[in-house]
Image (cartoon, rainbow, N blue to C red):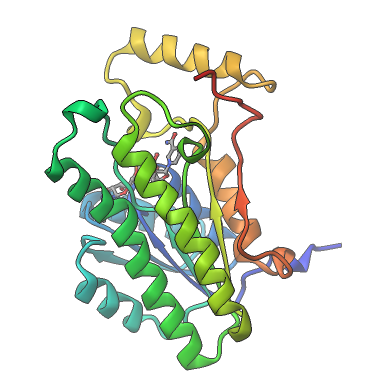
Length: 254
Ligand SMILES: NC(=O)c1ccc[n+]([C@@H]2O[C@H](COP(=O)([O-])OP(=O)(O)OC[C@H]3O[C@@H](n4cnc5c(N)ncnc54)[C@H](O)[C@@H]3O)[C@@H](O)[C@H]2O)c1
C-alpha cells in the first residue's frame, strides 16, 4: 500500500542552497516525492546540475541564481512560484575562527548568510503561504553545533542558535495559520562544506566522525534530505517548533 502522507504530488517546494550537498539532496528527494521544486543558490552552474538531476528522473525544477542575503531578489523568486507549500532554507557557509581572533566582518558575513538568509526565506515563505491560505511547512537548517559549541565555532554556532530561536518563535506565530516550522540539526555530513581538500586529512576526519557514531559511519546528504522530506510532508502534520537531529547518535566529545 502506498504511504500517501509522503506524497508531494501537486505541491511546490522552494529550496535554498540547492546547488550542492544537503540542499541538492533535498531538492532531488522532494522532486522524487512529487513536488515541483524551485531551486535557489548563488552557484548557477551547480543549480543547473541539480535541475538536470531532477529532470532526468522526470521531475520539474526551476532555478534562481541569487544570494540569499538579497532580500528583494529572494522575494521575487518566491513570488514567481505559482504556489508554495514547502520552504527548505538550507543555504549556509562555514566559518571557523577562535573567539579572540574573530572580526566584526566575520560575524556580519556568517550571520548574514546563515541567519538573515534563513530569516528572509522564512518571511517570504510565510507571507506567501498566509496570502494563499496554504497550510505549508517551513524547514530551516540548524546544526549539531548549537548543542555543543566547539573550538572556532562562535560565528557559525551563534548563527545556527539564532536559526533555532527563529524556528521556535515562528512556529508559535504561524501555528494559527496552519503553517508548521521545524528545524533539522545535522551532525557531520559528507558534503563540499566538510571537504578538507586533502585526502589524508579527510580520511582521518571521516574515520574519527564515524567512530563517534554508534552507527559507525558519517552522514550523507540523503540522510538529511529524508529528515527534511518528513518535516515537509503530511507525515509530520502534528509536528511544529521541533529540532530534528539526524546525527548518527553522535555525542560530540568537546
Ligand atoms: N555538512 C555538514 O556537516 C553540516 C552539518 C550541519 C549543518 N549543515 C548545514 O547544512 C546546510 C548545507 O550545507 P552543506 O554541507 O550542504 O554545504 P555545501 O557547501 O555543500 O552547500 C551549501 C550551499 O549553499 C550555497 N550558498 C552559500 N551561501 C549562499 C548565499 N549567500 N546565497 C545563496 N546560496 C548560498 C552554496 O553555494 C552551496 O550550494 C548549511 O546551512 C550548513 O550549515 C551542514
